[in-house]
Length: 153
View 1 (cartoon, rainbow, N blue to C red):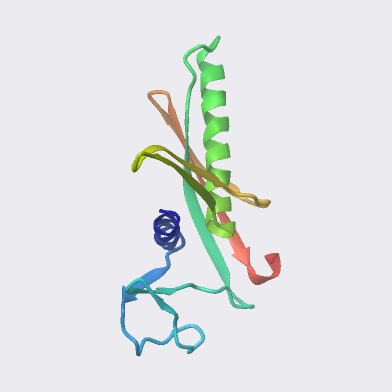
View 2 (tube, rainbow, N blue to C red):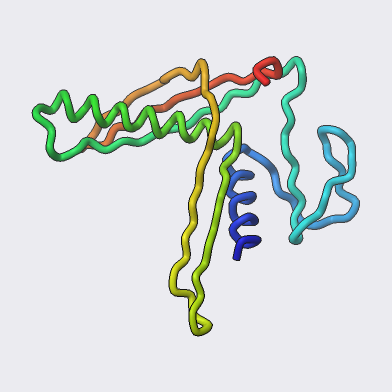
C-alpha cells in the first residue's frame, strides 16, 4: 500500500511540475543531461532541472470559501481571500519542495478497518505575487505566481 501511495504521489508531482513521462524504452536518454534514465514501473520520469542562467515561472490558483457566520459581506470576502492566499502558498510550496506522505493501514480479520494518509509540506516561500483575485458566490480564487532562479537555492 505504501509503495502504491508513493507511486501515486510521484505521478501527481510529475503533473504538477510539468514533468514528462514516457513509455518504457531502455534506450531513452535524459535530454537535459544526456545520461541514461532510471526506469521504474514501466515509465520513465524526466525531471527538469534549473540551470544556472535560467528562471522558472510557477503559477497556481488557490481557493478559499467565505464562512457562513460573518458579521458583514466585507468580512466574508476578506476571510475567503486570506484562505485562498494560504492555499496558493501551500500549492507553491508543494511544487517546489514536494509533499511528504505517510500512510498507515489497520487490518483485522484480513479486512482493512482503517486507512490513514497524512500529507505535509515544509518550505519557506518568498517573493510570490498575487496576479488576479476573483470572488463569486462565496468562493474566492487567487492566482499567484513565483519566479525561481538557480541562485534562490
